[in-house]
Every structure is written in C-alpha cells, then in structure tokens.
Image (cartoon, rainbow over all chains, first blue to last red; front, top):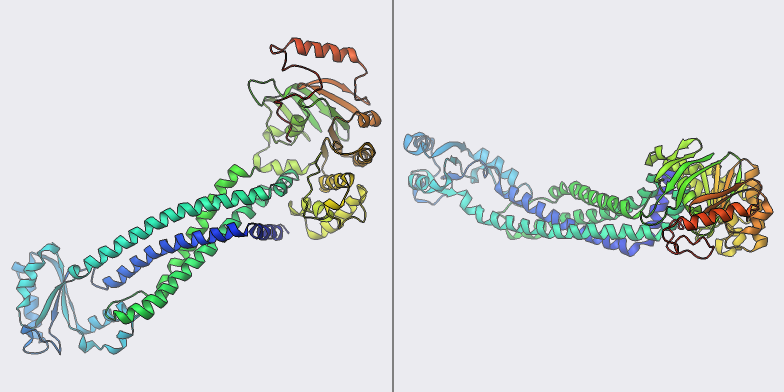
Length: 304
Length: 265
C-alpha cells in the first residue's frame, strides 16, 4: 500500500514537472556522455598498448618470410641467428642497459595479435607464419634506445629494431589530453546537473507543498514524504545515464566499429561490448549525484 | 492528555514571549476553548502540542509523554495521535471528498480495504453521507470544513486541535460544525479549539482558557467568551500594561497587533 502510494506520488510528480524532468535527463545525459567519453579514450589507449607496451620498450623483430631488410638475405632467421642475438643480449656490454628481455615466437606473436585485434576483421586473414618472431627488451633507461638500435640493426637475422614508445607516445599524449578536456567539460556539466536537479526538486516540493503539509500533520513518516522527491531526481538522472551509455555504445559500434576500423585496419579499436563496462559506473554516478543533491535540497526546503 | 508545565516560548529575544510561564492541564475527553486576541499565544500553544516548535523553557506533555523527549523520527507517531483542523480547510483541490479523507490513511500505510471501510463511516459521522465523490469546489464552506474534520479524525486520534475552525463560516454553519466537534468529543476525543467566535463559546458552555500576551488570564469551566469576573481581567490587564517598559507594545486592546509571531500554524 505504502509502496503503491509512493509510486503514484512519483508518477504524478514526474508528470507535473515534465519540462524540468526532461531538462534534468538531458543535462545528466550530456554530462555523463563526457565522463564516458573520457573513460572510452582510456580504454582505447589500453587497447592500443597491446600485450607488450607496459612491459617493454624496444622490440627487435627477426626476419620473416617476406623480409627485405639488409640483414635478411638468408630469409627467415635461423635458430643459430636467434642464439647469437640472445648471447649478444646477455653479454655485459648490452646487459648493463637492460633489465630483462623476452623472446616472442611466431606462435606467441599470433596469440597476442589475436587478443589485441579481436574486434577487427583483420584477425581472420593473418597466420602465425606472417608474424615475425621478436626479442622484447625492457630497458633500464628507455632513453638509451639508440645503443640497442645501433648494436642490433646490423646483426644478421634482424629485420628492424623499433622503439614502441616513440611510435605510440605522441598519440597517447593527444588522447590523454582529449580525455582530460572531456573530464573538465564533464565536471562543469555535472555541477550544472546538480544545480538543475536541486532546482527541480525545489519546484516539485513547492508545487506539492499542500500535500506534504497535510502528510506532515497526519503523521506520515519522513520516508513517505521525502522518498518520492528523491526518487524523481534519481529516476530522471538514471534515464540520462542510460542514454549516455547508449550513446557510447553507438559510438563504439558505428563510428569505431563500422567506420574507423575500415579506415585504419592496422589499429586495434575497443569493441562496443567493452563500452558497456562503463554503463554501471555512469548509472551509479547519475543516481548518486541526483540522490545527494535532492537530499540536500529537501533538507532545506521540505520540513518534516 | 495535554499538560503545560511552566511553558515559555520566545520567538524573538527582543519581543515579549509568545507564551509566558503557562501552566495548563487538559484532561482526556475534555472540550476546551482557547480564546484571546490575535497574538495572544493560541496558535503557539497548538504548535507546541504538535511539536512544530520547541518550548524555550518548561515542559509540554502530550498523552503523558514529554514532547521534548520525542526523537525527530518518532514525531510522526505523535502527530498520528493528534488531528488538526484549520480555518482555511486545507483540502486537496484535485481530489474528491473520499480521496481527501483517504489521503490521511494512505500516507501512513493503511491498507486499501481498511480505507474502504473506514472513510464512509467517518463521513457519516461528520454528516457528509452520499457526497463522497464531490470535489471540494462543489461543496459549501461548512461542508468543506466537515471534510477537513473527517480527515483529521479518520485515524482516530486521541486529541483534536481546531484552529479557528469556524472563522470562515456564517453563524448557522458554524453551529453545525460545533455539533460535529461535540459529537467527536462525545466519542472520547479530547478537543482543543482556538477561537474568536464569542457566540459559539457562549452557546457551548465548555471550559474556556483565555490567553492574553502569552499569559493565561482565565481558566473557567462551562464559561462564557467574556469573563464573568471582570475585576480579575481588569486588574491583570492593568498590571500587564504597567509592567511593560514599552507601553505601545503592551497595548492589551483587541485591535490588530502588529509583528506578533506564531500566527502561521
């Protein structure tokens, strides 16, 4: 009975205040979309880092089937060439610059490739043979990359030496800046949303002051009087958060999945499913914001 | 049922107290009029009973309990035991008669079947049989006040507070309302009614408590609106006026007194 009563109160509150409720939905929608966009950029950075990025800095790719580099005259790197490189890496002259290194065989490379590009159609057309084996080196000081490069580039069986950080770092710094901007915009919009929710609740409390006055007098509990107002704000904010989550999913599905992944087939993009891990966070954030701001408002404007 | 022990209520430190050391006891099942000019403290009295305000000093007991000791989350339970009726009815305009009365039961979680049984019964008590589906604007003032009374007593409170319930009504209608209140009182509910209406007080011949400037100046059983002992009233009035440093503020006349708090219960 009491639940039914509270629900009907919420319904009438939402109907009476429709334009304000719609504006709360839109403002939370926009602000949480920016929050989500920042989250999505971070997810994308993680995706692009792949398996090795956080573990090593320098990769020495060995010659594969179709390698045309000078050191690859003999075709695919032989086990002896691999052993020579390993010995060289372990020699004191080189070892002083590196923490450790790992060997990535063609099969390992294929496994990591499949993980990173799991959302991309390219994964089906690649076989382990096409991927080069490599030594992955964790440097003591990433700035000493040149020394490794000079030492190994000319070794037989080495196709190329790559400083992965140099390739991706600039892109990541742009993306990090973009997510910072998104967070700042989101912050401003969230302040906006909080104030708007507070105003909406105030209006709602004012337009129903007759009812709440009588409820007080006949001894309705604080919960029965306040809960409809709080839930009104929470419902509006949760709808906004759901819209934001849907928008992020749509961006991942249509923009990244359908368009960007065809334009840049060699880049790993996040899947639409991955954006859904942001949804609970957005819904929770929206509900919390609305709950807190309506509680604070009611404390001032709805005496019980 | 209601007991005031040395109760003082000060709204504004600079002004005189709204209630000044009031001692009063109203027994279970009693019918008492609270009379006095605007600003004499009638509404403050009612607000203190409801714990809308806290007494500055002294103790207010309602149903044997000191209201100062009731924690805020239990105040609703206190108010369930007290019905309140106002001069301006305070009905919900978009709800019909039945829904207005049912509202008081819904919000404290009474089941639908109990509401269906109780509301017509109470409407019968206040003389509104067959008008369940009227809207408030289709009713006369007297009928609206009966709806308000029905709403106040539908949860069977032990106390009914009425703040000038006949203030907006003509004398005949007022007498009808008094009949309803009397009937409710006969059923065992303690009734406290603040009023200006001398005809009604004189007609009913109930206990009369007269307040002036926050002080109980008369408390008589089966009394009239104006005191039958004018000497007491005169001397008290004289003493009051002389005891004030600011003579104008202490004007005991019945004219409108400005800046008197406590009228917005």
